[in-house]
Length: 389
Image (tube, rainbow, N blue to C red; front, side, top):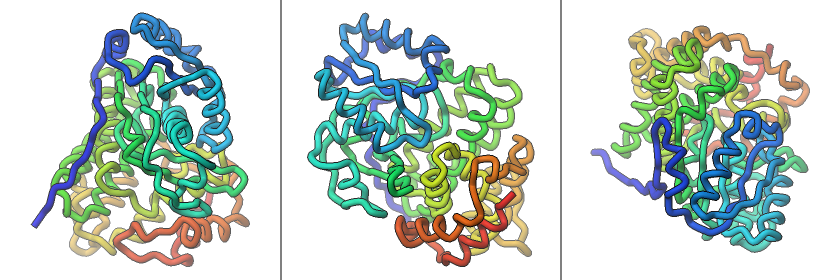
């Protein structure tokens, strides 16, 4: 028997050209803290200028925090929060990708809560306090990967401890998310690939974790996996195709977000986040790609029904002699089609001598009890060693 549990409170404005509606939408405050990355990409593409104009037409004031880093850091959240307090902001706006949005979410928490951000992390060295309130969050995404536009999570790195941890609170479900695929057409090829696989894994991992308990999650995650497998190769070869971009945004930003809002990912994601915590310039999607083949060869036979179903969603037939392997086969094909089948961890500074610390952080500090199967420290060491290039 299946059940249904669902709580998805974000108002979504989705579709090509819909950024323009920002000028007339009801916003949750009078002055926004806009979080953007330090690479000035939002300036270069003219997107920040458009958002500024639309906010002005809306009668909404703003201040800009433009120092967000990839794998957003606790230090950035603290600095952004101080700016928001100084300038009297009453909501936050994440403009760009997951780093900007997660910084805006972390800032929204700290504007409403007492103490240190890490007091509210619920794994690792976090204080495990419950984050019951936050300032309102608005997101305007220019990428399709994280799903943070529609879920109650943000992921922040503490560079002092090399931890990249999840923060969760219903209070940081965005009040409003604008998802305009036209803003994604200039996304670089490499980032399109990394974020596309992040979206695939969000949906697939939640499908596995769910185990067919929540019918709504099955619907969201299955459609997400199917859509990414179909459109990711095409959007890479024809980056300006709006149909492909629209489908990828739908799979990543809506379905991936909904899936994570209703359940959780697996230890594949924990391992990927740990790698990002140790190596801050290792893009999250790239870290997931680097260990994917070895990870799923290790676990596919442990839940063969779900993994074979995922493979079928991606166009592969199951093989009774290799239970669960249909997903591995489909994944390896997609990795090759998109040119990242031989991605090298060493290119991002990963050192083999750090493997023991990475495994300890993954298994013992953050924890892998979200899995429906059992993996050991030795298993993760083997996954890293097999993934090393």
